[in-house]
Image 1 (cartoon, rainbow, N blue to C red):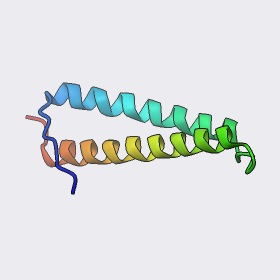
Image 2 (image 1 turned 90 degrees about the vertical axis):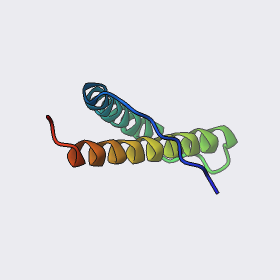
Image 3 (image 1 turned 90 degrees about the horizontal axis):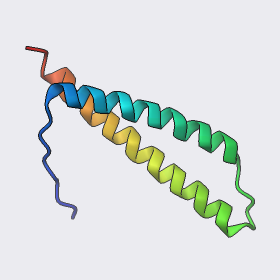
Length: 76
C-alpha cells in the first residue's frame, strides 16, 4: 500500500501551482494530439504514448486535489 505524503504550501503558492499544472495539462493534451495513435508495431511510439498518458493522469489528479483543498479553505 502506498503511503501518503503531506505537503504544506502557502495559499498563493498553491494557486500558482494549480495555474502552472493546468498549463502543463493543456500542453500534454497538445502533445498527445501530435503523437496521435501510436503505430502498434513501433515499440518506442507505444512507450512514448503510455508515458504521456500516465503523466497526463498524474497532472489531472494533482490539479483535482489542489483545487479541492483550495475550495475547502476559503481566502482569509
